[in-house]
Amino acid sequence: MKRIITVQDISCVGKCSLTVALPIISAMGVEASILPTAVLSTHTMFKNFTFRDLTSDIEPIMAHWKQEKIGFDAIYTGYLGSFEQLELMHKLFAEFRGKDTKVIVDPCMADNGKLYPGFTPEFALAMGKLCSEADIIVPNLTEASYMLGIPYVSGGYDEDYIVDVLKRLAALGAKQIVLKGIVFDSDQKSVKGVNGQIGIASYNSEDGKIKWYFHEKMSQSYHGTGDIFASVLVGGLTRGLSLEDSYSLAGDFVVESIRVTMSEDKEKWYGVDFEAVFPYLLDRLAKLKKN
Ligand code: PXL
Image (cartoon, rainbow, N blue to C red; front, side):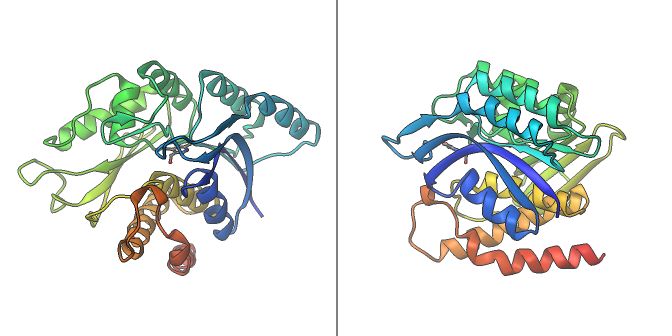
């Protein structure tokens, strides 16, 4: 069985980071090892959350793994809370990147034009440096803007603008860019027929190819869906799917998870009921594996 390592916090309640990565990656048939960076009572969108930093455990944990000659088929980093943790991730990549290990960085730190509590524009630039070492990065448009130091545009952009953002992100150094949360307004030049939907654009910096995948835009948004997206993408890639199949599966799984959750009266901070959609995920995974 393939084994990945994912590095992010444990938010005890609120369905994000490790509480979504673990079940999703495991369900997809991949061993999900973890390196927890902090323990919080909830994620940071709740008020008065507790926070225990685990930074000082990271190096001893890595040293033990080295001693035991433990290796990983993929390294997936998500929410990281400090400059020091970013530095430690450079070290983790250097020490645990085998010749076939894929490094996926989700620069999880912002959405809807705003940084999450506790993050600064300087931190976003440092996250950009971590992205430079990745095989694949999966920012949303807000994270992309902060990492590039350009203004966030909430709408009214066209296809050329997105292509420019993709190329600038690629110039940071990652091999493949997967940019999420793109919505072309009805009056903007875009990929044919996708105005009003929401989607993903990918850029392969080796051959310069750009691909698009759009799907239904749900009327509600929920916390933690970015982490779900990245987890499915990591699971798919590790099971041998192409990058395009992995991110389209990830996008569709998020949509189906939102759909089941919308039928409940639930605050967005509690996340989506992705657990109810595992049969869909596994069915799609099996079909994609056969192709
Ligand atoms: O879902 C991203 C995330 C992960 N972990 C923590 C967070 C957030 C977003 O706010 O606060 C602790």
